[in-house]
Amino acid sequence: MIPFDFEYYRPAALKEAANLYKELLESGKEPVIFAGGTEIITLGRLNEVKTGAVIDIKGIPECNTFGFKGDHLFTGASLRLTEIEEINLFPLLSKTVSEIADRTARNKITAGGNICGQTFYREAVLPFLLTDSEMMIAHSRGIRNVPIQDIFKGRLMLKPGEFLVGIKTHKKYLHVPFESIKRRRQWDTGYPLLTAAAVKAEGRIRIAISGLTDFPFRAFQLEEALGSRGAGMEERLAEAVRSLNVQVLDDSEGSSEYRLFVLRNILSDIAEKLGGETGEGI
Image (tube, rainbow, N blue to C red; front, side, top):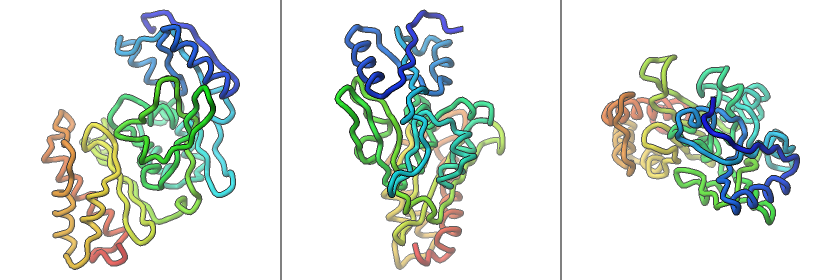
């Protein structure tokens, strides 16, 4: 049971939700957007989240859409991870989310809930970082479309009164060669240690990582090092790991040294699958 009282709202339209969010903020209710609700319930029970109002966006059609409009795939923020996995319109996204938690949890966790959550894993964002997707952000004046690299800086940089409606991804990225690798300390059980997603687009490998530091990110410097010409794969792998400019986590799941060791092996697997052992075509 959540140990505090709150008001519950379930708007049926985006404008209604955005106006309600604005009003509740101005009245001091500290409203929380509810999509899957797993994190609100879990953290609420631990007294790590407290709110006077919850806005459930699952009844808004745009937040539940998973389909094409023109040249873009629209992934609604309220889509459950199991829906994304089973419908499989975006194979890299399906593969990546299929390894988040267990199936019972994925039946509740939503795309938006995972991306906007407080855990540092948030693996669902990785495919979108790799495919130059756009985040559709609702506010009281309408919707703004923002390139993900401009608004996701370790977390989604939403302004007060804004919430994520969905993500737009150009269809040209949906079926490019890809790899998604998760490594756990205890193989198929326990929390993830590292997750890396990669695509080969426009002749180069793109890589995004979760679990290395306290936020998911696209590893531009690593991509550059791994794709450099005139060096052997071993040298490139070593330089790729050296190029990282993030504070590597050191916790009960794994030391920083162990995480870097695992990352190097993951990068080797990615390079072999998407570029070949010699790096040809990277």
